[in-house]
Length: 77
Image (cartoon, rainbow, N blue to C red; front, side, top):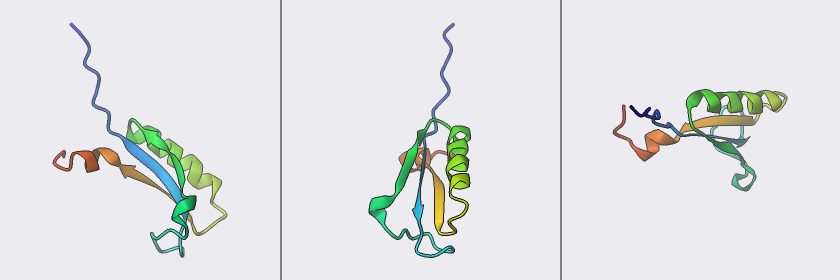
């Protein structure tokens, strides 16, 4: 009996400096920090946390986790 590998749920972690702290608009799209693509939320969250903690002194710097798997298959629950 072969073992079935669990479905990978891809997540993108990226960030950059925002126009102001309450916004979600970036100041400069060419300077976005693309942290990486991860196979699950747990790993992506760990990468997000590390980057977010490293920029805690800059109120305008924000990092995000994007659920790529939801964009690729919008009908998935």
